[in-house]
Image (cartoon, rainbow, N blue to C red):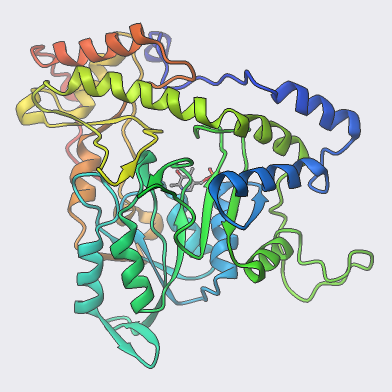
Length: 403
Ligand SMILES: *Cc1c(COP(=O)(O)O)cnc(C)c1O
């Protein structure tokens, strides 16, 4: 706990400085705080317009959006879903909720996104295409869907993935929870596959504390998602249900905040990019430190500004650097244990996962607050630059093992 008291620059903060209060007041005054209110439909309409999708269904979380997406895409128990080996756990959890199993495909080392080359390899070496179905030969399970995750605000290289999905008739569900506003070749993420899923959890760039969104151009999928998200009511008056539904709808109160946040989307992303630009400038010449890159075909929001720390050329590993920065009052954080290492998903299949492990070993997330502060950004940049010559090696904090 003493550790915690020294933090003067936390990883995140939150500022609701737009119309949040005004809309929440209006929401309360009109009594439309539950999911039936106009705020939910206003939020959905506004969101789908901004993203460029025909339909949007607001959900209680990004995880419930993913769960609904897999349900309406028809992913069945025992089938396989292709997921990147490196992501937040929710991407894999949702696959398990429908009884399917993830196949963890490695990420590529430049932008840390799902590796289309390794995916193609997996399909050609381990799968068989027969009678319109892709079958994983060793497990004899059907490969049903592809779930690319646009990680850290950077889009996945969608073109080769979509080509494979088309060729092998895979449903595509994009996990855009970290990448609202990111673009792949000038088109918003979430609009490439059959369904896109977003999150507005407290730790996301655009937030109302909790919430999610599912977007699609398919009216049938939209209806089904709406139906399942509201307890699968077959009759609004009589409580008649033909299916097991869920209580996954967003509340009006959340939507009111979301609507106000959405109005600030441009400035929220501009702020993130300002932090990234500052870090990139300060760290580009530091040996052993690599700040996240943006592909020429990408518009990255840098929602989670991340460096990779190479112990051999930097002198400290990421845990040591984290400890050292913490002593200076600066909070940083490692990213997620690769999903392929997760005990929770030890029943899943992994294919040639190497890069995810090495990125995880080296990755450290830097502070990024709601308002750009050049002096903080420079302080962090300068400390990391200076850290290279420090001989601080608190062995107790050093961690070489994964899992
Ligand atoms: C945050 C996140 C989710 C889950 O969203 P919640 O709103 O927290 O349920 C899913 N996938 C990824 C990649 C995330 O970062």
